[in-house]
Image 1 (tube, chains in turn orange, yellow):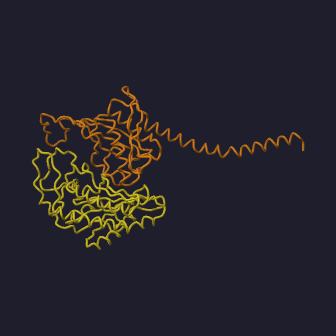
Image 2 (cartoon, each protein chain N blue to C red):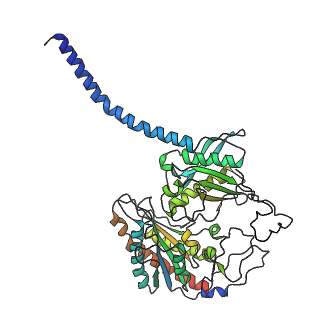
Length: 223
Length: 241
């Protein structure tokens, strides 16, 4: 066999050996990469970061599941840029609660859930409208559903003083339960002591008969 | 606020008259039933709603039915009459289940659940927190004096429900390792419309690989519930005097 052919065959064998060693690692990396990118892309669309002119860096208390005790929430101090506007501030906090748990095991809300909108009524009622995923991906059960709701209400209570109580909607609709157990038809206490607006001094205007009219002091939704 | 009203029981007429409209409404007192004689067991879910599903195919709706059957035997042994809100794989509404209790005199209501996740073999008892049974607008006048709004039916029984949950949790802690000794409160939809002392009991979890691990818990669970109800009977009947 000519010497050149021997060298070529030797080089080829070396290349095959290197390829055989490198290929599984390359395959693993390729499999992992699209998943991460897809999740990142989805988050960019569904939960874009919220920045407002009044953002100030503060240490916020976020309530995630405890790393040590099952079924219990634990506050974690996180440095966040939070808006002075309570609606934007609530959105920023809930976004962090959903997306940035310290570890996957401490997640209290499903990873894919999106906060679609947040409103604050003049009487201190917050309305959080979540995507369907909150109902479909929260583990069914009293403990897990109550933990999910408590993580929302306690995070808001610790960081957004004007919210007196919270209504949770699923895709714009009132849902009877979160995932079969916890009641979503009522309101959850957030900061019960938050000042409710003073009662109107004059009686509301009487609605003309035969028609539906908004109340005299309309409950304008703050977006 | 829902405007559906129900006479929660024949004895609702014994309630004190509703306060004047300008005063904030107080939680009504539970009507006095002299004896506790009925236990309404509510195996949650059923029918198309299987409840929690384990990775190995364990269904909450099937396990809770087994728990209810075991508890019925134990409670009947204590001389109590037992009503089960579903006998097979059907799914009564929340209100149908509540009505099964609200049409009884001297009853307690126990809703049985199995969680999706959590450490295996732990059992929690829950009663409704006070805020969950409160009217959405406390300043609103009582809609009809002498009747109990269906959606606040549990309001008059919160103290008794809490006590029943405490007694149940003590019994459960003695039988299931890792189970806490004090009960929790949770805004369980099923409990809100029950006009009787009412608790939910949740066992963890359908995540166990072997279904028999949950089934093996049934006798101890039944015994714990029967003992708790028996202990509660004295509290209940003392309160009725």
